[in-house]
Image (cartoon, rainbow, N blue to C red):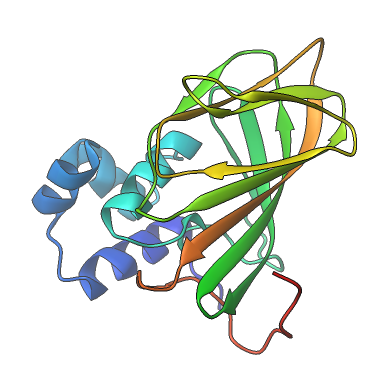
Length: 187
């Protein structure tokens, strides 16, 4: 049976030997909010899930529903709505691929775990992505890889845009949430 996001969060937290209070301290997410998430009493925003997984040194996909789950596969932030497409454990990195829609509102993302890289490829529209102190404008067919372990941002330019987001996590972290058995793809 597929685990809910709350069950995944509780399992991830307890497998790391972290209390609710400690996870709250590390992530900046309220203890009551974490408890409600673990009991599936509320949904989580993208920034909240990133804060929790970063505090647990795990990839975002550790909390995302499986592709065959009945749960809604989308998670949203200020500007980004994303769905996990696939994930692989490819030593020395774990890779997660998301399809996302980006709106014109600016989404400021806090740093993820040390060594995390992000690659954005624009499918349709134009976006501004990259480090919060700069970023790069991209159009359809263009890609940009940047450090995800520093403050960064997303926003569409001139209307909503469709992107593919590839998250590259160093496997020196837990690697939780990766799936075994996938063929190795180009890095």
